[in-house]
Amino acid sequence: MKKIALIILIALVSIGNAFSQKKSVKLGLLKYNGGGDWYANPTSLPNLITFCNKQLGTNIALEPDEVEVGSKDILNYPFLHMTGHGNVVFSASEQQNLRAYLLGGGFLHIDDNYGMDQYIRPQLKKLFPELTLVELPYSHPIFHQKFQFPNGTPKIHEHDGKPAQAFGLVYQGRLILLYTYQTDLGDGWEDYEVHKDSPELHEKALEMGADIIQYVFMIN
Image (cartoon, rainbow, N blue to C red; front, side, top):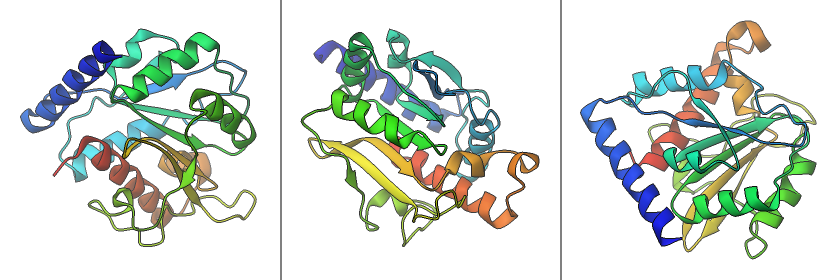
């Protein structure tokens, strides 16, 4: 665990330096088993990255890397994104790998693309049986980075008509995992032609995504 933590710490420092020195860095898109469409929203991350590069001054490579949940390569990505509509299954070895990654300093953002909720929650409980998935208060700093969201994560798509929520797993005072539910930020990040969201909704989704990036990488 100490070795993994050191590897991720080095990666975080490298990324911090990369942002300040304008070197390109990459985000990771988590590839998982179970039949869920982990590859959904193919234009979402490139659009978010473009927005962050413009608004936050980052220099993130436009195409994220696909990385399997059980691969040691996840250590190369202090920020992982996960999405989909359906089933999610983490094997015992994948659980061990992802848990070590998160406890060692990594971060995972899960965005329910409508239909993932009933599958991901049991997997998270197996991943961290000692932790409780808690709803983040509106005062949490993740909602108050460059862009202000006094009412928490914005509602992008209606789906069941429930309010948008942001949940987190917190380990030793650090937010290690963010789960956005009933908001569908990823859909909001996509090209206009995909969902034909209004410019206002598209912008709000991108702004919330940028706040997540800024919070995780502590970009001033």
